[in-house]
Every structure is written in structure tokens, then in C-alpha cells.
Amino acid sequence: MKRPRSALFVPGDKPRAIAKSRTLGADVIILDLEDAVAPEHKEQARENICAALQEGFPCPVWVRLNISGSIWEQADQEAVLCEKPDGLVLPKVEEAGVARSMTLGVPLWLMIETARGVLAAPDLAAEQSVAGLIVGANDLAHDLRTGPDPERTPLLFALSAVVLAARAHNKGVLDAVYNTFTDTVGFERECLNGRALGFDGKTLIHPSQVETANRSFGVSPADVEAAHELLQAWEAGRREGRSLVTVRGRMVEEMHVKAAQDVLAQAGTSAPL
Image 1: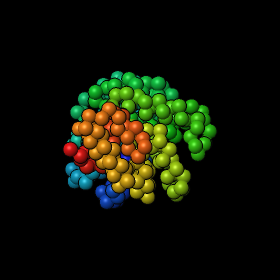
Image 2 (image 1 turned 90 degrees about the vertical axis):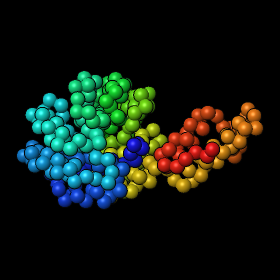
Image 3 (image 1 turned 180 degrees about the vertical axis):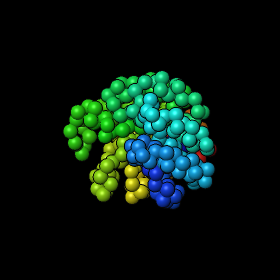
Image 4 (image 1 turned 120 degrees about the vertical axis):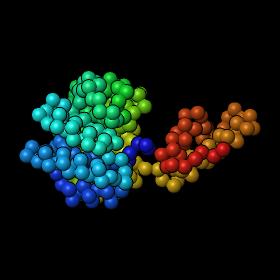
């Protein structure tokens, strides 16, 4: 699966929202049993999610479970076994043993939401069952005792540390949600900031955010054209035995070739022969 540009949280106790999510164009839907569901609605949410998984989705579907050790943990796991989702999201993970103890045979996405989680990120990303890491910035900011900052300056070290851990182990990594979904300018700015930091995509809380996230973290036609141009120049240079290849006045090295190949892979197109 291509790494998602957009992963939309949908409350498990809202069947209409679950049904609508199939039409929104998000790369991934995350059916939520945790923060978005009140304690008295947990059981109904499990039933809704089980039914939705059996009905199917046009995109990959993950389920966010309640925190490990909670009174809902066993019931959550039993519910998702009704029809295995494409992934499980585990909140507030701080130790690799939590991922190791999950034996449901489903790829795991671990939420990094505390200082301890950030420091453990390299070990978490190294786990074989882990497909990727997700930053939970709201809880992380609280744990770090930082104040609000539209540029996320107090969180930059932690955000980069999570990206670094994921990249070191070739795992996916998703940026945190943006709470003020009516602030479209601020949301797009944070998407572009997340892409610049190295995130694959962004977790979302509202349908209106899907298009912007897909565009911000996606591959444009211009990106694809530039990648093809670079790869064609590289292959031509190799056939001609040239040790130095340039494209538009820029020297091309192996890392540029790999980056161009990654662009085409994300776009779902082929490199030139």
C-alpha cells in the first residue's frame, strides 16, 4: 500500500458518519473506539465498527483501540476479530512490549503522544509488526507543557525525532490532527510544514480536510514530469558512459534518482526504461 496522505478519524458510535466516510476520498479511514467515543457508547461503537468492516470500504480501514490496559482492551480486540481491519492504531504507546504483545496478525500504527513515547520511538519503529508511527500532538504538547504556537516551534524536536525513527526503519509516519477544522489557511500551512518535516501524510478530524491533505502531501503532475525528466537524463548518461549527469543545470546523484523513483511510485506510474 502507498503511504497515506490522509487518514480520517471517524467516531465508531456515529453510523451515519461511518457511511459517509466511504465517499470522501481519504486514503485511509480510522474507525475510532478511543477519544471520540464516550464510555457509555463504547459497546455500540464496537458493534457499528464490526458491521462496517463486514460491509467493506473502498479504501484501507484501520481501527483505533482504547489504550492498552484499559477496561475496554479485551472487548476491543474481540470486536475487531469479527472482520480484520487493514490496520490497528494503538494510542499513547511508550514501550515496544505493547506492540509485541499484540498477536492479532494486523499491521500496527503506534501513536506517539508523550515524552516517553518520543524517546521510545526508535524501538517502537523497529518492531516487525509496526507499519508506522502517528504523532498525537495534543497530548504531546500537554505532556511537554508547551503553550499554543501556530508554527509548532516547541514541538519541532519531537516531531523530527518521530520522523527520524520511522525513516530509520523504513516505516510510515503521519502528522498530528489540526483541531480548528474551520481554519483552512492554518490547516494548509500545517500540512505543508508537515511535508517539509518529512511526514507522509496527516491524520484528520473533519471531512473538509481531506482534499487539502491529499493535495499537500500528494504528487503533482509537475512532480511526475520532473521525475521522468531526471530519470531519462540519468539513463541516457549511463548508456553514453558519462560520469556526470545534469538536469537543468543541477548535478544528478544516486539520491536524486531514488527520490525521483519514489515520486513515481507514490504517483502509481512507472519509471522510463
